[in-house]
Image (cartoon, rainbow, N blue to C red; front, side, top):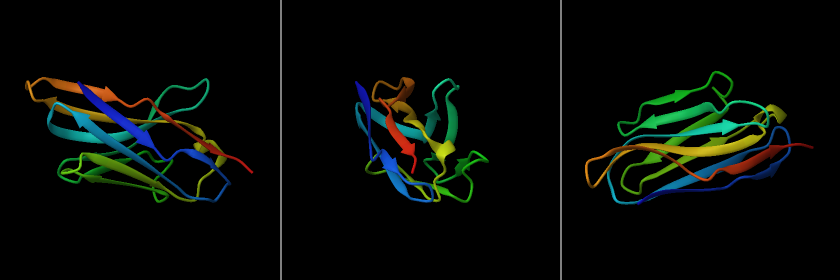
Length: 120
């Protein structure tokens, strides 16, 4: 069993900041990539940012310069610091991990999602 648990969503005014956190637990041998995706109503899920175990990061163009992803390999956590938030950032945010289980099975797993609403 592998589980991703997110926290930190909520309501914030335009221009504000919010921090999302995600912790992985269970029968994990290694985590290759962790990241955040989001899905707004009526839209497809889209990549927000990812970080590899080596620290390489990748961001969607729409969040570059405003969002920062960070990870802790030992704690199996990934955070997303969001600043200068815009109404169009409103979405359900999902944590994602590409990992290897203790049975050496490669797995892509998702968290349950946390809502971020940017509104005045």
